[in-house]
Amino acid sequence: AGTFTPNAAREDVPVLHRTVNGHPLVWLDNAATTQKPRQVIEALGTYYSSANSNIHRGAHTMAREATEAYEAARAKVAEFLGAPSPDGVIFVRGTTEAVNLVAQSWGRTHLGPGDDILVPVLEHHSDIVPWQQIAAERRARVVPVPLLPDGTIDQNAYADLLSHRTQLVAISHASNVLGTISPVREMTALAHRYGARVLVDGAQAVAHLPVDVTALDADFYAFSGHKIFGPTGIGALWAKPEVLATMQPWQGGGNMIESVEFGRTVFAPAPHRFEAGTGHIGGAVGLLAALEWFSGFGREAVAAYETALTRYAMAALGAVPGLEVLGPVAERVGVLTFSLPGHTPADVASRLDGEGIAVRAGHHCAQPALRHYGLDSATRASLALYNTPEDVDRLVSSLLGLTQQEPAA
Ligand code: PMP
Image 1 (cartoon, rainbow, N blue to C red):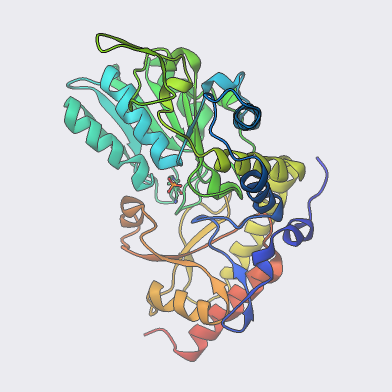
Image 2: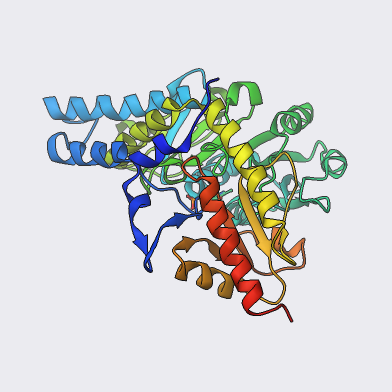
């Protein structure tokens, strides 16, 4: 892999060149959403100004073109994930909808009384709540898999909790609050020994780690377009076609049927049977542009750059008195959630915002993960390929200013 320097990416992303509160913007809220390169913005503009049409139904040129664009995006997602065929790719609104689709559609058929769904304590609420909902309906159980003190998943506990009652394991590839990279391949191999399926939440992984669903042997892989430089409102669920073949549609409507009679409706094959109604066609076009843009830098090279930047940031943050970064020290993505004794996360974020630095304060939709550290709120700075060591320096000098101005109580 070649080397990657962030300036090429920065030049493509217009919003990074604005100021906020009189300072050049430092965008460190990438785990919430990423900024968009002009390639994505232009793809959306071009689609709506010259090619907008519904798909799959009209027998006219633009309907055909829109269908081709939508299916090209599906093929790109498959290629991007290392999936053998586009037939396993279902367009959804994002990771949350993908998990709900699996919970409702797969869960209804495959979960029953006494079955277990294993969910690590570090999961995002969107990888906890849909399982609680379907478990209540099917009288199954959601079983938390504990964490070790460093924020990694306790693999011994995981091995002990797995049993022939386990139907599903739902794991984040990378955590949105602790930065933990889960050993997905190993956890999946173990789950499969018990005949359990594995869903991987890739929301925080796709823009930061090379992903290959075939090598991971995951049954489901979900991600959101907006966290990988694409538009909001579009994402994808990939599933093994043999698993999709065991699932009933979760929503009914147009576009997902073969034929409808009042006596009997025949559903279209996957993936279309899982995409009722008009999809986010423009969003898919934007997602294709985002994946092309991102892939163009070389995913290995970007990951290597981000690993080095994360290491730099961990060391630099260590210079702020009292500051503690949650999660593992090594083997992590650039999600840097920290506590700063004597300063509430809301105060920290507001101080940084005053200097043009965007971070997030709160529970990060991962309350059990924060509780593991005895916290209910924390500040999170999260990196992406266009961030630089200078961004990290601005963050650290602003935090140092805060701690010097008001010594911790
Ligand atoms: N899982 C993880 C790990 C996330 O970080 C997020 C977004 N913060 C989600 C799921 C939910 O993604 P979305 O809101 O795009 O559906």
